[in-house]
Amino acid sequence: MGTAENSSNPRDTTQNLPEKLLIDDFVRGTGIVKDPQTLRELEISPTIHQLLQSPRRAVIKPVSPSKGHFRLLQLWEGRIIEVHEKDFTSIISDRTNPDFPNEEVTLDLEEVPIDDLPLIKLGAVFYWSVGYADHPGRPRVRESRIRFRRLPKWTQAELDRAKEKAEQLSTFLTSS
Image (cartoon, rainbow, N blue to C red):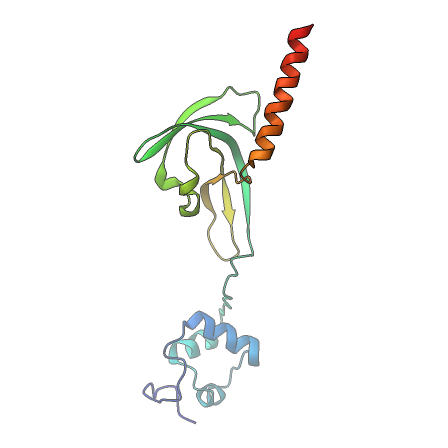
């Protein structure tokens, strides 16, 4: 086999891979090898060779996006009352501290996920959460997330039944 110094070797698959993945694969697959001859035979790049020979070795594993969590600090429920070209105005109610009064806020459309943009219309309900996103191997990030409520559209039959019940209730209340 070639040596680590021969970087033009066509069999050297380490040239185009991120070194942190190579370190992880090497250590996980064979254990830490201290023998320089074994490292040369395995065609380990010089940088990885130095990292593995260093007294302070770190194994960096790729982070799975599913690992991690969001720690909620604040949650509001909002209802859109005005829609403009670049923003929308809403009345929000505090779901974290329900004793606080409702507030009127204007939010930029850039804050809304692309998939939710078609849902922006008068009366639409959304949830605005602020918290920390924690993922292993990454710094903590403070995030603001906006998600619109998705409910199935009412059918005409459901609307007719609701109107009929409302009329019955109105008749009952006005007859007394």
